[in-house]
Picture (cartoon, rainbow, N blue to C red):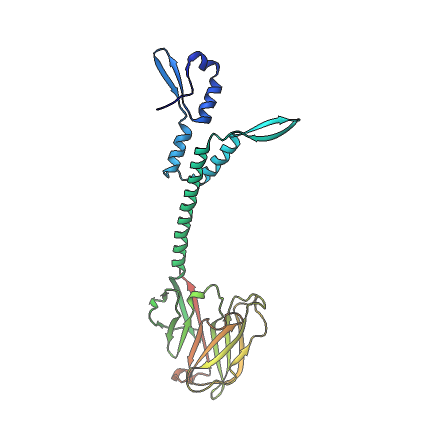
Length: 306
């Protein structure tokens, strides 16, 4: 059964109208006014409607409005009292306990919804990070050459696709590449992006490597590149130590002379934190075209597709 503060006549309403309106606004309890044979009621609707709409998700700014309304209720329930010529806040008895509780629940709900949306966005970003397409250009002695890729990677023209988790193996005549596409752009691992073999004598080469790595001073830098053999023959003198970081020189090229190698050889680099794991280049020194050349330069460009 509904209870009202009082039943008033219009004279009383006219005399105390502002006080009565403040009571309705603050308490939310209606006032009944008798006007002849008709009874009228003053009811606070705006704040209740606003909360109801916010609660059912009809407002897009509930997260912010909830904070503002709670702060607003605190201010309205404070009164400035004079005492010994000093002003301080004295909190009135809480009249909006239920209203404040509702606002807190709304705020919690909005935080949960916001976190849910943020989680979905992070999942989408993660899916983009692990499903990358790249435009690949491979050059052999300065000329672009056709290439193929090994499954599960796929290609469409010069666009290669992978899930961003496995190494993409790329084949050209007489050579191949192992591309760590998951680390491409970050360069936490040391990547070989080009190599040059210059024949000095039979099975003896001066070999240079172009290395790309996110050097960060002495704490994390590419500290070595090496030439290794995948066959039975061992590579001799195939390790070049990189004596210092190259923060301001990326990518950078260094060489190693008097390397003895034959067969299928690879060029790789490492850093002082992660070790090996970056992109590599392999060259088949027994391949007829390669055997006929005194100098071989293999390089590639890998560009993310937006």
